[in-house]
Structures are given as structure tokens and as C-alpha cells.
Length: 516
Image (cartoon, rainbow, N blue to C red; front, side):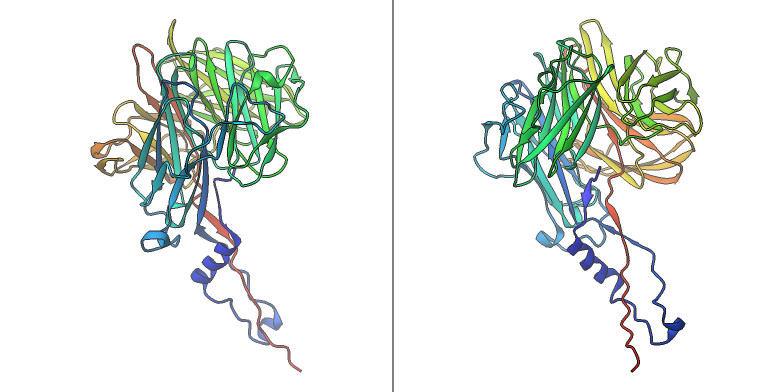
């Protein structure tokens, strides 16, 4: 999924600034052939977009938004101060539909429209996060854009705490970039669960979204034939169980696509017994997947996978722990039939040591693309909390997660195939503090779970940026835990390459003049 875009005009301007005028080819040189093509140039993106769903419908919800752009990664993406340096703003959507009355087949009536188009968050300086708070169930979805030096790597975290009620829990989500295609394995339509897919439209025209549900027996019959209409700059939450008349399924894969335009999509799941959290989209279908950051004290881990192609998938299941990779006793493999959702209960697979799940083809040369996610539970009895870990890509050149706290933050780093070294930078705090940096080495086939560096003199929360220094791919996740009255509240966010730069071809031009 695209996290950032570079406009054609910006690309042309940037190329002119970086490469100068096009090369000239002298008449007759090299027998009249054009100059050799130059290698593409990597340039910082000049504009990014993010969308945050409406956080909760609970009147006791407490939400914190934290926005951040890493320092030092935007050379060439604007300069100076003020507007020339760029700006990052998140504003309320024009409307948020009522989740209890939304009709999937119609343009939905908003429950609340903000009185003014006033930014909730404004970021003006890379390297220092900013935060804002919202209470209650009327907080709207947010739409935002960053430009100039604030665009490369811009990220926003939305963290909500609901201390009581049916939606209780700690709900965290990294606000998403708009896209046209999303996969959500791990959803459900059973009575115990209330799962809503939130659709946020950032544009000035309405869009129509198709939602497909796939259970253990294949596609669930849809009751919505005309798609879901999402009005301009609006957020529409749709209860998954209302989309089908088929019997309820515990394990469901949700596929969201747009007929035109783009949306942000994420699933909010609330379980009567296990609490609630956001389920973010899985990485695109692939033959091998990594699901990083299973907490050491997880009491239940459930793997859900789906094969969207025409072939069945045979997956080998391995756990990358602190000292190496093992095959879980609960399940060595998983067979996923084409077009069907498969699941397996891995129980307390980590056995007191943090780990990450590695899915690979059971037979070499038989890689079938799949999507996958984990439902992770901490605690026992009446004191249980749930979170979700979708499959995610590597951190690549750089990845960032915001809203880290002095206590309760754990960073998990996994090197599935080859040892690697990463640099982790803790930013200044939202209210003060000095950045700190630490380098970690991760052995091949292991997961390193650490308490990350904390800024000296920290006030407020801070951002963590992970950069690959050497070695193979590294996958990462951040766990944020905040116990509340005996409940082990927590949430897990995966980190993926922020795509702060884009590869732009170097233009060449032949201005040779033909001889008479």
C-alpha cells in the first residue's frame, strides 16, 4: 500500500533542481546515439496523506493523537521556515456516520459535523512529536496531509483507552494512508464480537466500496449488492455481521476494494469477554509472511490466514524466539484452501519468551500467496485483553511508531533469514526531552524484545525510529501496555518502511541538430 506520493510537477521540479539541465548529445558522437541512460535518483516525497478512523462510540473513551516526522530524512524536501518548510495537519472529517444506524447501501447521515475546519493536530518541525486529546464518543475521524520537509516518514498514532463497557480496552492504530485494496484476516461475525470496518474517504467526491467476507467455507453471501457509499471527506463504520445472512463465523477474512477513488480502512473489534482493539490490514498476499511482536506473557495466540488465489496453500509455522527458531508443539503447519479462511489455536506459544511467527511454504517451489494475522490475548479469566498483529513487511530503510511511553513500551525486532543491525532513535518528547540512540544486533532466525531507549528528561510521549544499518530484512512491532484495575490492557503496532523517498527516473534530452 502506498504511504506517500510524489506529484508529477514536484518530480519535474525536483529533477531540475537535483540533476540540472538535460544532457546534450553532440552531433555525430557515438554514431548519433543518445547519451546512456542515467540511474534513477531517490528523492524525498513532497506530500503524504494519513487517515485516522473515528476512535470510539463510548462516552468514557479517552483518545490521544500523536504526530511525528523523523529529523534528518528530508533533505531537498523543502527548506527554510514557515510554508516553504512544509506543514502537517490533521483535521476532522466533514462527517462521521452513526455506527448503529449506518446503511451500507446508502450515503449515510452524519451523527456529528465539526463546527469548523480547525486542525486537531499541527506539526511544524521534524524530530519533535506533537499530541492532542479527545474525550467521549463524538470524536470524529481525521483526514490529513503533510508537505515539504514534514512529508517524508510522517506518521500519526491514535491510542484510545476505554476503561469500562462493551468496548473496554486499549485500542491503538497507526493512521493509514489512503488506498484502494485492503485485506483483514482475523475478523469475526459471531454474536460475542462486534466488528466494524471503518471506511474514511479523504477526497471531495463520494466513493463506492465493496466489502467481501470469506469464512472457513468460502465466500459469505452478501446482502449488499450496490456497495457501500462513503460520502466525501467522511467516515462510515459498517458492522460486518449486517453484511451477510450466512451463519456467524468465528474466523473471517475481510476484503475491501474501491470502485473509484480511495479510502482508509481498518477494523475495530470488540469482544464481550476479551476487550477491544483495532485490526490493521495485513501485508499484501505473499508466499512467506512475518508476524512480529508476540508478547512474552501471551496466554492465547490464534493464527488466521486466507489464500486469495486459485491454489491451496501449505504453510510451515515456526516461532522465532530469543535464541532461535522452533516449530510450535500446537501446530507445525496449516493448510489453507483457496478462497477460504483457515485458523489454528497456537495456545501460549511463546512460553514466557517474546517471539514472532514465521510463515513459509511447506514445500519448496510451492509458494502460494496468503494474507494472515494473529489474535493475541493476555491475562486469564475475567481479566483478559486482546490485540491483533497483522503480517507486515520489513522496516526497510526506515520505519517509525509514535506515542511511546516511559513505561510499558516494548520493541520487538525479528531477523527471519539473515542477521542484521539496526539503529533505534528515541525522539524528543511531546513536552520535552533529549533524543537518544541505541544500536541493536539481531541474530538470524531470532526475535530481540527490548525496552527501547528513553529520551533523557522525557516529558510526555516520544517516537521511535528504526533504521536498517546492515544485514538482512528486519521486521518490527511495538507493544504498548498500560494495566488498569487488574486488566492487562495493551496494543501492538507493526512497523513498516515509511517510504519517505521515491525513485524517480533521470530525464535525458537529445538536442542535437540534424545536418542539412
